[in-house]
Image (tube, rainbow over all chains, first blue to last red):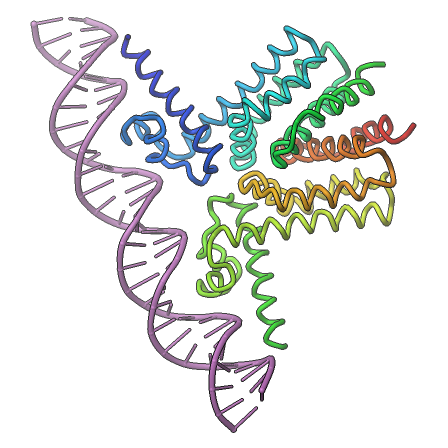
Length: 173
Length: 173
DNA sequence: CGCAATCTAGTACTGATGTACCGCTTCAGC
DNA sequence: GCTGAAGCGGTACATCAGTACTAGATTGCG
C-alpha cells in the first residue's frame, strides 16, 4: 500500500470513528483522544490530520451529508420515489448511527456551507418529479418524519403509510 | 419575596441562561460555571439546584419543549390553523434562540420521556382538525421546514406558501 | 542511494471542568 | 423565639481537555 493510500485510510478511520462517537456519546464527547481510541490510532495521528476539534467535526459532517445524498440518490435511481419509505426505514434502523450523527453535527455546527451543498444535492434529486416547492415540502416532511422516529425510538413501519400519503397528495396528481 | 419564590427565580434564571448558552455556543459549552456566569449566580447555586450537568440540560429541554407546545397551542386557539405559518416564522426569527436550543437539546439528549410528552402535546392539538396520520404528517412537515430554515438562515417568507400548500392538501378537502 | 517531507508515537504543560466540602445567612415550622 | 434545613458564596482537588514539542519511522523523489 502506497503512503498516500495509507494516510487516506487513517483519515477515513478517524472520520468513521468520529461518527461513531457522535452517535454513541454525543458531539460533546468528541475529543482528539476519544476519536483516536475509537479509530485505533495514536493521538498524534488525529491532531496531525485534523488540528482542531472543529476540523474533525466538520470532516465528519461533510462525510455524513455526502453519504446521505448518495444513499437517497441510489434509492431513487434504482427504484423510484416509491422506495423513499424503504430508504427512510433504513435510515432509522441499520443506518441509525450515521443518521443520528448527521442531525447532531448539523444542528450543533450550523455550517451554512455544508447545509447549502447538502440541500442543493437533495433538491436536485426531486427536480424531475415535482415543482421546487413540492420537492422542498417532501424533503421537509421526510426529514421531520425521520427525526420523529429517531427521537421516539418507535417502530418505523407506519412510515410507509405516511410517505405514501405525502407523496400521493403532492406528486400523484 | 418569600423564600420559595426567590429560589424558584434562581432556578428559572439558570434554565434561561442554559437555553442562551446552548443556542449561542452549543450543548458542549454548557458547564456549571458558564451557566452561573450567564445567569449571574454563583457556581454553588447551579450545583445546588442541578447537581449534575445532565440535570441542567434536562431541565432546559423540558422547559423548551413545554414552551413550544404552549406557544403553538396559543396560536391555534386564538387564530386557527391558518396562523401556523406565522407561528413557524416567529419560531425561526424572534424565537430563534429557544427553537435552536430545543433541537440541540432534543437531539443531543435523546430523552424518550420528554419527546413522548412533547409529541403527545402537539398531537393533541391537531385532533380536531384531521386524522392522526395527517396530523403527524403536518407536524413532521412543519418541523422539517422549520429546521431547514433554521439551518440555512434564509428568509422565512416562503414558509407561508409551503404551509398553505401542506395544509390544503391534507386538511382542506 | 540519499534527503527532505510526511506521518506517527510519546510526553508534557496549561487551563478548564465536575464535584465535593466548609461555612455563613436566612427563612419555615414548631 | 429556636432550631434545623435550605440556599448560596468561596474554595479545593483530581481529572481531562487542547495543544505543543521532540524524536523516530517511512516513503516519495531526485
